[in-house]
Length: 100
Figure 1 (spheres, rainbow, N blue to C red):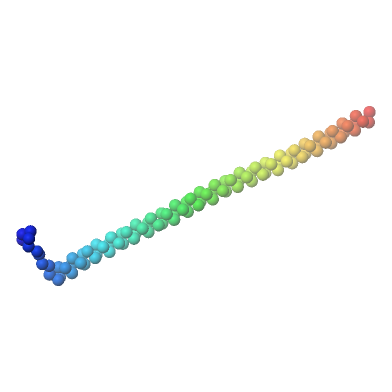
Figure 2: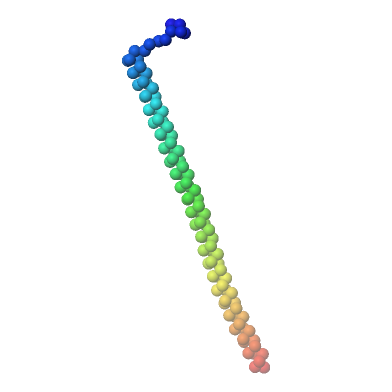
């Protein structure tokens, strides 16, 4: 067949070509859908991981704050006891000095 001649296809050949192209298109669509689903799942997992990291950060901060409050309470009780002892001893000292 020369370049200028046109090949005529039979109806069955055309149907066969259409079926092959349709099958290839459906396969490509399925593959693209699978890739899109993977991307969506990975995106959800990424957001979930970020939320977990943020929650862990807040939990650690809460633990640090709780520890600081506990230490502050201990220091406050300790300082109160020391102040009370100083007050009592000071009162004894003043009372002893005045009674002489």
